[in-house]
Image 1 (cartoon, rainbow, N blue to C red):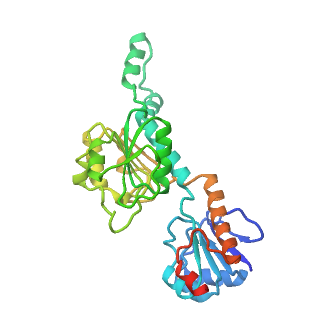
Image 2: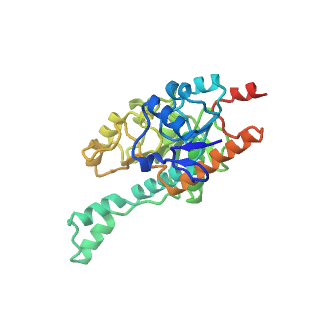
Image 3: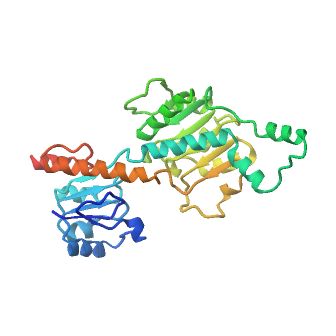
Length: 324
């Protein structure tokens, strides 16, 4: 067999065309199918390229690997009908996103963005002990230890965030209607109770029809004005307009966003003008380690499949029944 890989991947005896190095994504299915045929690929491993009907009907693939937690760029129904297994990589970026989440919390609690802005803007005066005392008072922060942190969603990322928070001696509560493993020390509560109690709210739920708009304007009103809000999951989970208004008018102490309703992030975005807000351009999973994680997960799935074993992560398990 011969594999074509367009995802970020550790290459070994494959045709490796990293989409990030290529600088483009295959949106044209006919073009992508022709390229797959040209290289003679039996196995396709993607991250962002679209694998829809034109690709699946335009070439003969034996398996597909998708380096994402949710393979939304692959037509699973058609792949299943053709008996093509689709392997995916849940949790590939859980550590990376959890690290960024904790970085956001610590930076907000210690006023790091405001400190940097003050010194870079040249507005700080340190001509006397009184100047230093005023600066010290202005930027006195808080520790994670002793804070109540509410996690909305306790999946792979949420669990890793919880474990990090517990190491910082925070009190961790979580809301999840279908929790799997619950780390020791985490208390499950109802969502509205979480929003009322938390000093920091952090979103880690998947985006589904049930969770779209979950953190509504009405629910945001339950938050304490001193609370901090962090979203490294999906923008559509929360009412961004309501969040902006609350942050602008002092209804929230601060917030950090890695995801926005309008992406990619542009320099003139309204949230960037608020001094209590940090924004990053959807880079929660942007670490070199994620490439290694997703490579290992997908390769393990392919090796298990070739040995006749059940892969750990398969997005269309119905093909297993047809295989028997």
